[in-house]
Image 1 (tube, rainbow, N blue to C red):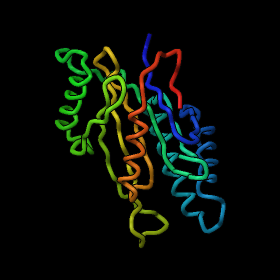
Image 2 (cartoon, rainbow, N blue to C red; image 1 turned 120 degrees about the vertical axis):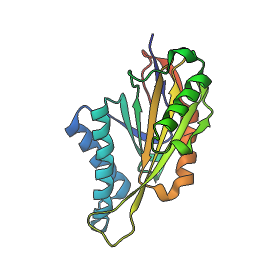
Image 3 (tube, one colour; image 1 turned 90 degrees about the horizontal axis):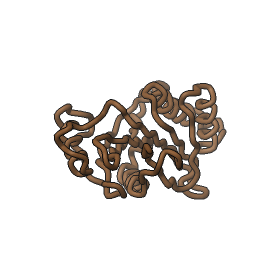
Image 4 (cartoon, rainbow, N blue to C red; image 1 turned 180 degrees about the vertical axis):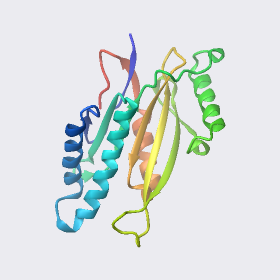
Length: 209
């Protein structure tokens, strides 16, 4: 039976079907209003966050992601703009010579990311987790607001966690993103804690927050 990666997400997260563009954008817009509020002076912040989260959902739809989760609150009364996208790339299999040991799969993946000069490959670290741990890389991306060219750019943080599928040479990718790149250390600590609790379950159990 096929294994799928399951997460215990803290707080309140919305499961979004990226295949339904209209419905997914409606859920994003509603979540942004919950996180930012509806005051007129927050219009620019709402628009920026909405566009960033919509872009995550659109990218998930294009790449055929298994699921997208959007954080509304990381704890009661603590809103947090963050997303989790889970991919199981069927075409990504490590070389046959390495076997199926998790360390060997992740070592080969790390080498491949370095060889390809993938963005963030130089930040790679191992995160302990059930079923063999994960390889994490991250990126901070500056984004200039079109409506506020004179202001400093906003920084987005992206953190990718690669998990070896038990008993195979395949990997699953869990990608977190948040526009709170200026809180880099705190966000990585949060994402690491979530990633460290993820585990593989049977397909019948499903991918669950």
